[in-house]
Length: 186
Image (tube, rainbow, N blue to C red; front, side, top):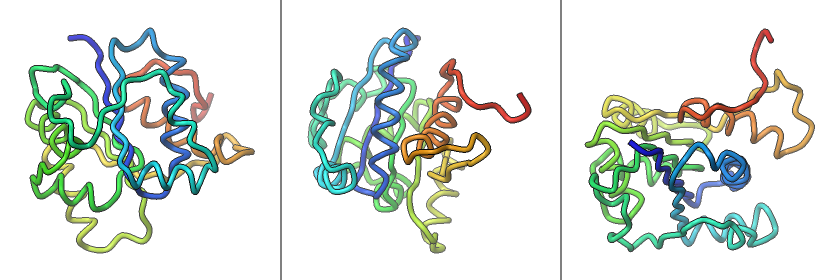
């Protein structure tokens, strides 16, 4: 199967994670055959608030609207093998956990899970309440991977983007990409 990736950006705080992920994926373009993006309206607003720009418009990738159920990854026959939701809002996670496929992101997550492919949810909330924890458990039991946007500091990151990269590199590792990054003990 070809390596086809869909990135979904929700309105949770943490736009820097999505930016760093997109930037890194563009440098890894020989490791995938398709890269698609779904970005919610709230995600666009949060990006502009947190990053002070609308540079997401400049990425040379195919963007899909939340209501576009004709997107290839809305069906298992589209054979997208990895879906990364970054940042993943708790509302999105809750709809996925509840099996509610009311937009392209939740439909695509449903497809990825039913096809036993890789769903990585980079949740960005603190603190967690019991509903969040149970939803993370449900998605994990269904085959998804919860990767909290919790940075590491072993590599001594000096900028916000370097801090975000500690999470993004972990996500890329989980997704199966061959990357050069800080490795503990090396």
